[in-house]
Length: 138
Image (cartoon, rainbow, N blue to C red):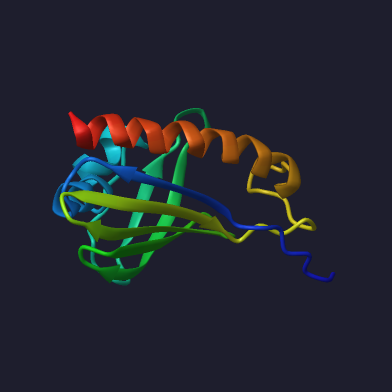
């Protein structure tokens, strides 16, 4: 079956918070849990951890890139990659979330087509990057 790649989800926001504070919020287990999901992340390349997706159960993940304080990337489930990119803007931080690995011909572990899930996830991420903003700006 041919791959029919769907566009990555990208969300970019500028936070009124120093880069180290934003890094700690996305690259530590406690930080990630505060705005995303409970997890046992360690920011070590190759480290395997789990996201607790509530009703969807535990999602296996694997850290692929750790470049403090600018980039963290991990595989999520069987198809997806999440990447957090941080850019220092003085006392502010530009944060970009990239959710990639979408394919129109694939379904999730739960049998939902990527095309359907992607729309929901895009809206979900829009809310989550605002939740992260509230957390780091508090």
